[in-house]
Length: 214
Image (cartoon, rainbow, N blue to C red):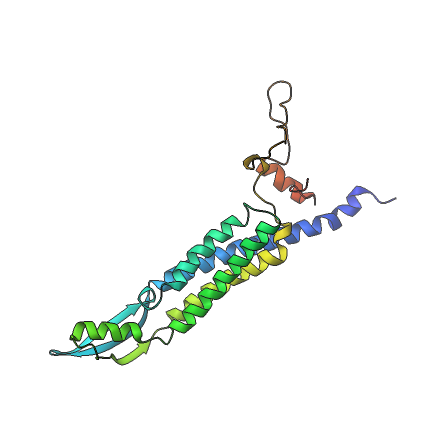
């Protein structure tokens, strides 16, 4: 006869895998958004414009070149948080949005890595000549850092699509269930132990149970 202790490691394996994928997705998404936002504030290109007094140095940041990486990183960060507020089809949709934000951040950063339009516009402004262009154009590595941040967001989205259905959701006490009665307090006024409390949810995961199941 097989004891419950013998089957416990096998039952707990899916819960451990879900916790690991959840931790990786959270770390990857948050770090990716931070990197993309930081990189967007740095210098992406530099050069000079010819003015009456000689060469005038010019620089542009990632936000000057394109605002897409920073905007998509913010949306992706919001989607990462929203993954835990929805379930089933809603979670799949939010996870897909998260992945798309990552892919869009990568694409827009790579397109901006060789852009010169922002510097040419600056050269025209400082020289007073609409046809002026920048000379000595050079690009930095910050666009590729933004692309790396987008790749991390993309990884978080793909993990959410793959493993998100097994991740715990927001506690049931924050959901408005129409006909679900509240559990009564035990004699003495103590709150009943149940999966609604965060500590009980994690204990249930450690036992290999699904605290989000009905």
